[in-house]
Length: 467
Image 1 (tube, rainbow, N blue to C red):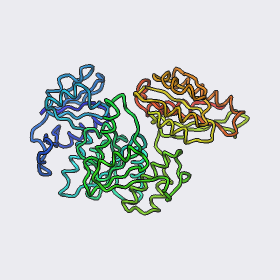
Image 2 (image 1 turned 90 degrees about the horizontal axis):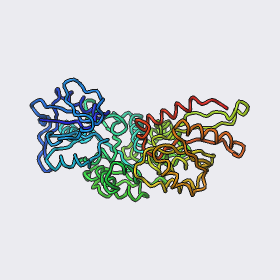
Image 3 (image 1 turned 30 degrees about the vertical axis):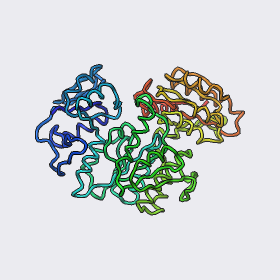
Image 4 (image 1 turned 90 degrees about the vertical axis):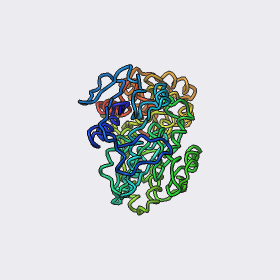
């Protein structure tokens, strides 16, 4: 059997490691079509060695010994010769070459899909519980909070998925008492034929139009977190958010509508993370934990301790205006994980009183920046500094907001412009200013990913000297 791993990044490497751990490069998932009976647990593996190929557009990646490869600009050529292809999330589902391969009978899977199939095969000895979290933004924070609350309650909890760890790596550690919390992106959900026991649906809004065919496809991908649930499962969703309700309506599971404005266990000021959007994330995590009968005191303690994830309105440092005015400082926040205009709008709303300088821009994802323009009109933002591939597009959208605008050639220049503006305007401010780096766009025009972008911002800021 010819097996291909399409995309050899972090998930592709984890997948190969898992396949090898199951017996050289043997694969344990059968090829079966929808409607066919699944073989008994423990008997689903193939009995012969398989040829495993790595397919990746990067021709310089290191290929493990004994593994065949097809790299470079022709990495999607002749896909029809493979029996099964494991697609990494970064490879769009509807590429013409992939559609053609599916039409010719090639089976597609993924690390996430394989994980769910392996979990289903564990039924006889007791399956662990799986909690899946999706939404456009806030998935990582909410999934992490659920995980931390469960750990604080003494549960055998594991965190994996889009947050950076392949769920396959958790399988050897799981028992029937385990709980696996998965952050699930639209790319991981798109071809998923099973849903988690507990589904969590955060706010959903336009995103990833550079990879999905259209918004309908993006929204439909999200529904797979709910579509295959059983009546005995649970689904949590924000009642006041239309698309969150719409996704939840696809589920047969018991519905748990969440209303953050009626939540009383803690308040926004109890959190160490900034912004009402982060309060909503915490409310959702708490409601899931309460349904799992975690004590309120345990939930509250875990929520209050949580300092947030890197690159999500992460406080970096504050520097004095000058050597004389050391008590008056400019604070810098890194929100590099913001890759769409809605999350940048949420970032500036997190600071409703402080005079703010926003640094934004990057690689375009085919999104409309009107939500950012609306937020700017009612904000304390004094200057927007734009850089990156789509800086002119954003500038065109926000130019009528009345907020000053500057363009920069790169991130270093943008930080320099923002800092100089904040220092020179200090006399006009009653409160110390802040500088927020919240790009509202993808990072791939200048950086490896959003984490690389955020780390470079932090390095620039940490090297700044007081004026």
